[in-house]
Amino acid sequence: MTKNFDELEKQAETVRTNVLPESNTAGLVGGLFKDIVAKLREAISSFRNFPSELIGKLSVRSTEKNVVIDSTRYVYDPVSDTCKESTASAEIPCATMETAGVMSAEDKALLRKLEDKFIGGSSVGVPSINFSQLDTLNDPTTCCMGGSSTFYGVVASKVGGGAINMGVLRLFSDDMSHVVTQVLTTHQIYDSNKHSWSGHSDSEIYTYSRSYNFNAPHLTADKGAWTEWQPYVEPLIKKMILGTGGSVTKMENSEIANIWDRN
Image (tube, rainbow, N blue to C red; front, top):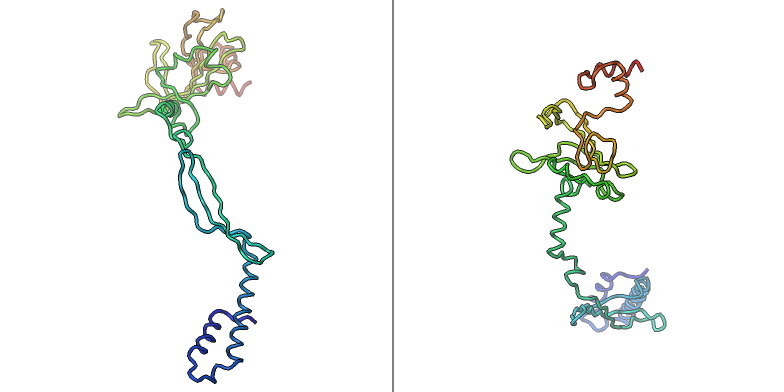
């Protein structure tokens, strides 16, 4: 069994400290050399299991266009059973503002616009629009085409600063781009007599709809104008309610539920 380095060191120390000449016999000194040779063979055998190429010292320098990394390598040569030294270099283009990802002033301005457009700084992924700007979504050729968003978070200015999401808006057109229809779900209450929004309800959720007459011949609003916001009711339910002689705006939820149960 090959001796370890501690054992070899003890043997060498014994030879070194022997005072009498006859103490360092041929067997003692020769045995030490044989043990050292055996250890070296074991070390070389273990070294062959290492990677065939080792990287030594590295140095970095720069040129006008590149960063150059020089390395000293030690490559194992199985023929001579030794490691031979070699050198190699790698060149990397110097980083510019563009390649390093540093944004220009124009890029930063665009990013700010995108952050303003999306709720929560674009983390939610749903574009937002201020409640006061709903009228601007009125062109089916731009706001309802493929690739355009048809779902918005509706925000309003918050007391003390900032904005709060106060509803969700669905936006779509027809297959001939005659209208732009908005369907708004919110806690806000629309007063059709005053033609304005008049407060909100904490316990009720309302859905309203309206359409912009882009080129529709049979719409209550003239071309280039919005219809009035109306409570949105599914056509089937609306027919059932009107069939009873009742008014949609005056019926309670329980009455609507009773009509639904009967049908």
